[in-house]
Length: 77
Length: 77
Image (cartoon, rainbow over all chains, first blue to last red; front, side, top):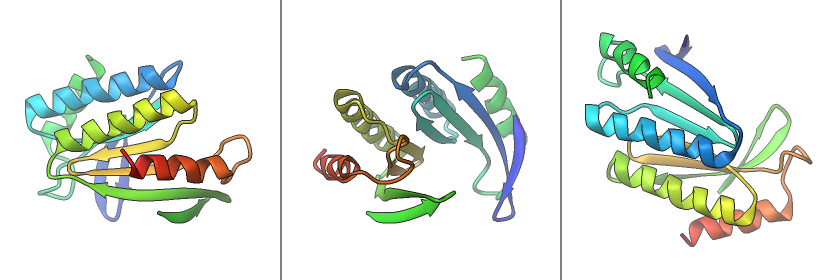
């Protein structure tokens, strides 16, 4: 995970690689199910063989402890 | 759809809005199924209430007629 700052908003981001589009999209759905379960939603960028997951907290326009928890839960999927 | 040029690569892009995360992710999956059926894959950026669909042709590093066809098929989903 790296911290990227965009428009003054710090975001926690990691790139996950897969052998094809279908497996990338399947991971997007796994992260999506986690997001729905936890009530906190990331940006998920899905391409052929790649998913970039970006966590941040909209309300505080930056990173909250919960974003780091969600990043750890994403790694455990 | 608008044409965005990134790193010298022209890309066809449209933003689709939804009332929640689940409906956005459902649309991502519909576009993903279309992409698999057609053998041409976009970038799909999924957030709470928003999906940004980006079509371009990697091989020619730009836009091919097929990208416009895929954009029209995306609209018809």
